[in-house]
Image (cartoon, rainbow, N blue to C red; front, side):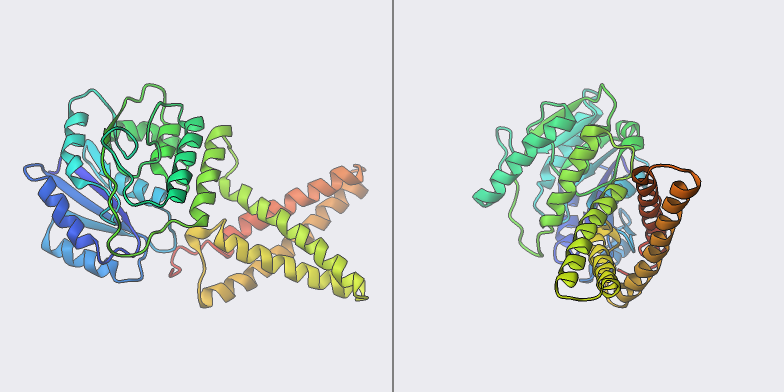
Length: 364
């Protein structure tokens, strides 16, 4: 039985994973280990390569996720699939220093700490060949993260760490699983008393594949910080869905105003405005709110049509509830309007999450 589990979330890392397995095996010589790849339906043959490695080495196994993506949620599923008392999380791009894994395990087994973090910013660590702009952005994000971690850590956003399973289980009920910063989520979600230790490591340059860092990752990080800072009990996806809807309302009014200014009849301008806003909302939700279930190809067309249908019913529910509140309930027009809007947005969120983006069998 293994004593140390290594969780590796991957997406399109076919050129790196075999070398990673070799390096991890060399670093953990004399230690009983297992390595779990969590593949978010890669499109470059990563899953085929992993299966080949699994057939060659029983210590390597894989979880393949279809229809959902996200580093944090992938790590959570990988960790939950283990039975060891200690685990580590390491990226699949060879940029983390696997030779630090034995030291991490020894610290956990000593009983003096619950969490060991590989730090790029403490003495002896390094960020590699990052550009000045990326270094500044990382430092700013690190400072911001301290709002929610409430810990004196040099690198609370590190993707390279090891942890006692019991400590992880204590944090599990509060984890959001949102975004790409699982360590930040863990630190912010753990009960008081979590003991943490940092050790330095030097971040390597990527040799193969492409970085997954983009503007959406930054947005998800900011949303995670906000979520943990104010303790939202409302699902983060609902907050994003409502935000997108607000932007769509602005576009609707702008389109309607422009149409009327061009002399178009009100009913025609209103119809064009509704379709424009719905289309805008669908594509922005597909890229942002449901990025982990993003629709592509033919599924994108089906998703757009189902979104039109669901939101049309939502509009009818909005009008129906508002009218009932105003005429039958004798509430003010302000209260009636808000009641209708709330029912409409809740319906649209729940229904589209199941009908438009909810099919777990959908191919990515």
